[in-house]
Image 1 (cartoon, rainbow, N blue to C red):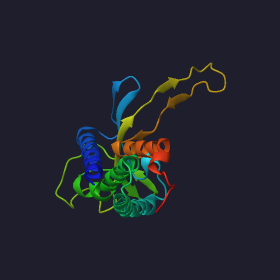
Image 2 (cartoon, rainbow, N blue to C red):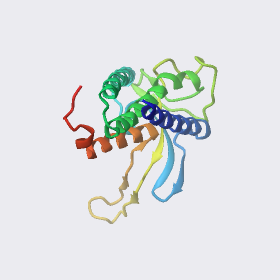
Image 3 (tube, one colour):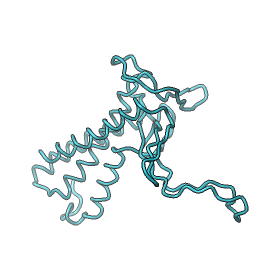
Length: 212
């Protein structure tokens, strides 16, 4: 249990500290180069990891509920796994996924209540609308939106290929090619790395197969 709590707390601490710093020091869409192939680029995401979203405000509510159910299910599984004495090959990656889910849930549930500005949904045009300026903390409940309507803060950007193709280049001339274009955060990274570890060490994580 101590290892699960330690991993979860550490990831949440880094995740929330990085998000709060970016939101209170960057304008939306600001981008600074840290070194070639890595930028800090501030975007807000109303949906899932890596910028995917759907369904407007209903889709956002749905994702929050899914995250809550996922976290509740993982708490149940942790209890069973600890009772059975499962190995760290299972517990540590799952703790990373658990922490990542909580990290993004915090943004979606509470950031609209504690910051004075943020991306909001405009039902009249069925679009999420950004904002200007740098966000500041406000008294709880006096923020830019209401419970469950906050947006996830993303900032990690790895444009390993960033190329404006010359106009005279066949077929793709004049286009901009970027890889990897998706912008994400520490919570997303924890979920992805945890899932990759489970895949790599699946035989040690699930020596008797997947059991619930």
